[in-house]
Image (cartoon, rainbow, N blue to C red):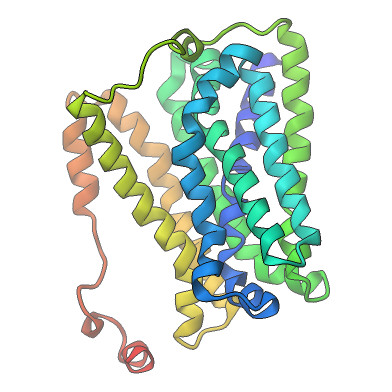
Length: 299
């Protein structure tokens, strides 16, 4: 029974890490028009959470060592939920930016904590559950991007209600995490907490190389996540199509997210798997590779 609760907690917590970003993209032009925001200001709604991931992720070590993995994760998820629900009252750009910042802090801390959660409760099948975690991130992105516009219609045209809707995920997750935390008793410092006293490897060239690599990967992913919907709309498609394109992008990523960690764990050389994945770059190299109708609209 405990294992089942841990799996559900992992699934629900992972679902919370993308909707506060991906739900914005299909509605970005509507939000911009309603609040009178510039293009740069509107882009901050998806940029701020990503910046927070880089800035605040290291603090997850201190959270975990002080309060334990489950309690810290519950606090981070509660922060995401509070920020998401607050968007219902976001009648000014400043408040909307504040929700993006708060959600970004919660996401930044939740990511490393979920990795620690997997190591703590699923040590024997770590690679498989990392795949489950990755796939669930894509599910959250697919659902939120695909349903943003329909939810706006269901809530009488309110984009604020559409964005705030995803706060219910945090409520369900929080209840389960707090139950697990109570069962686990006093917080036990995780392995990540044991390293809290160590300094950052600022002189390690490999650490900088990995940071650059993951930074570039995140830059590409979140650029697509933030701009794919508005680009589709700019090419003459409706907001529903823009959300559907984002959903398709996320759906294609799901099986890959599940399979790659397993392949990595079984491969003798992870570099080979990485090179194969990089080779699957199917982007068109010019407008001529796209449909003529699309080229004519974008020119």
